[in-house]
Image (spheres, rainbow, N blue to C red):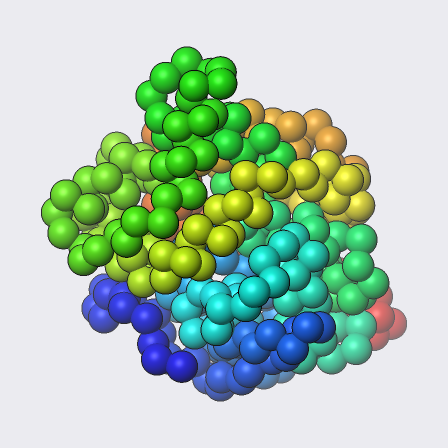
Length: 308
């Protein structure tokens, strides 16, 4: 599996993994997995979003790997995980369970972090036995559980049938994204990032997103268009925190507010003024800080209780 295009220097350049492995999901799909940091350190599992890859988490991995075991994987069809004909929320949940089983010891607890489709992966897996075995706490970044197309603000029109129809076609387009040009970066910034995003942030995100094969982008857009994971919210009983940018056009704050209202154990909610959909890249220190806080508050407590 060849490494996708990404920036090669600066804070958003992916660090080299301590080890790499291939994990088989329930249907045999192969998943590329990276492990960073000390093997004996508290684990954190990172699940990226639609059209992204492990490279999206570069800033979090670089910081956390100093004193955490960071596990990041490519969703099927993304990054270095081959495409699969099975594209569904069940497949997302199967894949996360497979990664947890392959990288964590029995009963070992981790903070699980999901961005966008990665957060939807967490909701899809919330009732699964292996997820419950391994989840100490969860951070959901820029995500939602349903009505993604109807609530998206990518098309600058009033809410309604016309906007929903146009949004479906924009997000589900089969057209190639092409090379990362100045125009391409402007379009991506408008759709996915806040107006104040620095050029290095936009460059990093554009290279990750443009590396996603167009067929994969289209196939998963259809899954997201019909998403309904309302039941998954009620099943997510571990301590859960949510983060969203107020300028997020793909999963605007209405989704986060709905999550906060429905989560059984919401321990925090942060709306970041002026930030867009790519919160782990746009606010790397804050997102990493939230992960550290969850690990210290909940993963450490579990370890102490189990060792008592």
